[in-house]
Figure 1: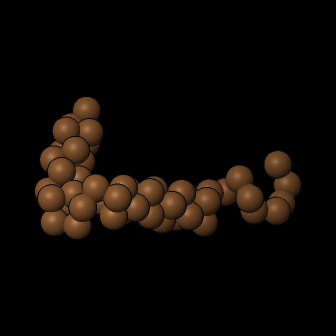
Figure 2: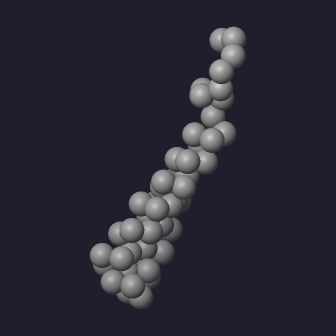
Length: 50
């Protein structure tokens, strides 16, 4: 339950440096990296006996 306030603080500082439009891209890109990592490590997509 600590991730949201810390993330909001970091994105607030990032928006101050890069502007609000550019700051919206970073969380989306990080989420895509997290999803790619989860899909890559997931055993759901492996073929084999269930």
